[in-house]
Image 1 (cartoon, rainbow, N blue to C red):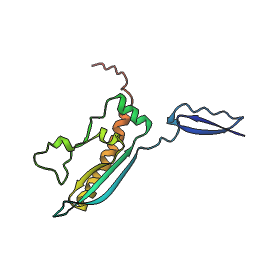
Image 2 (cartoon, rainbow, N blue to C red):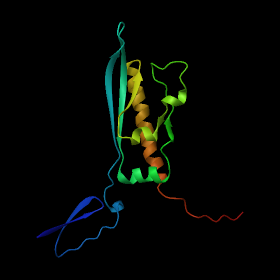
Image 3 (cartoon, rainbow, N blue to C red):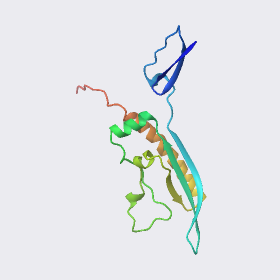
Image 4 (cartoon, rainbow, N blue to C red):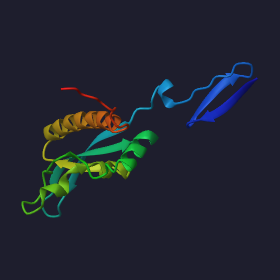
Amino acid sequence: MWRHIVRDLRVISFPTDIIVLQLCNRFFDEQPMRIKIQHVETRTGFPFKTTHHEVHLTADFTHEEKQIIRQRFLEDHVLMARVPADARREDEPDWYALRVRHLFERRPDRFRCATPSDAKLYAAELTAVMRSMKLWLEENAETGPTEIIEI
């Protein structure tokens, strides 16, 4: 006979004569933030078609990461300053910056590059930025300890 208990959105199975209490997610293997980077070739323009190479980024945050972003008001934090290949000179550069709220909406973030090489370089830079964002979110989870310094 097995019983199933749902705790912290995970199912724990145990025999009836053994009781296992797992109090927090830190004892489990933490679910990682999922990031999907996709390369797409698009053609725009009616008389003269222009080929652009887009990089689509979709991020699936864990429940804990979503709570950290909401509680600490981190939605407007700029992750990466960038300018796409088809940007106009009069456009404001802040318009194209990658922010946490763009990824939080659960829609793919699309960025246009001129060549496939540029798209690959951008994807590598994006991967590094998302790794540092994961560490940054972990650091924002708790406040720092109290320190006493004697000089």
